[in-house]
Length: 433
Image (tube, rainbow, N blue to C red):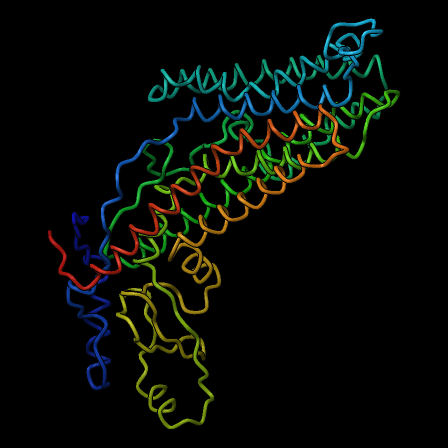
């Protein structure tokens, strides 16, 4: 196995470690300031496998949302074109669909793909990319505003509110940032390679905690984008066409079910694009350096517990603690978990980060199971004798496109399962520098 190199960075904490060593020399137990290299975290090399580029990801999502909008228009404006006495040979009454609504949905669903194509050649040219971002972003917003104004002139002010409602949600989530509107995956300040943050193996506890904060903010940013993108796609591709069809007789229940399955399909597609296995491996590596503290009951009258409390170290932010080390912090007693621990005792964000990414296999297995259940429900609904042909088309479209997300989830589950099983088996081997 190949392992990442370890670099020692003790310049900022050597003085504090020496002081800590002198003050704790009389205490029993191992001195956490002196650790053998063999117990430091070891990372197994992540296997090479094909990954989806940003342009291809945005193209797939754009095709999915446009297809979902077309199927919803079929659900609402379908015709009986197969009947002999039918006066039309078209599948849909296209003349009943407002052209500006079609333009609005088309512009909104293709904006990210077009932007990714524009910036792919100028990824490393900051000023050109900045000009493209604000120029293209402003142009798209002007087109959307023009289409919304024309729709308002033909309909009512309530429709204008329906069209602009997601804008209020966007401002509450992202503020006045333009990048989330144009890209699904956008970087925070830091080092990124191929839209993925870079993990730096260091023995400096403060740098490790700072890296954890950066990765935590990146994960939260991606999660907000995941929720907003899936809801936005379902809203404009499913609900908005219904708002303009008040005078059309259509199956409201079927249209609502289409919105739900589109939201679930967009969620699964967005997840595999935003959280690939390689991304979760970066966060997993960081958790091995972070570790976790388990709170103990300091008031337990058990004699062994009292001995532990009496011999416990006072937690220091400059030190790396080996496994099963007991420390005192803010009146609490904590035991370290993991190969090493630099987390802050009692810090809830550190605990949640460690539990979530200590074994990312659980995430992919859970989502793969849920995706399989959704696919089975969709396939089972096709067996209903009262189902209409247009809803068969709706379910078939979403189920077919969701197969790709299901495949990626199962693949990531198998990769992470075997990877971390091998990592656990080799955790006691020495590190090769």
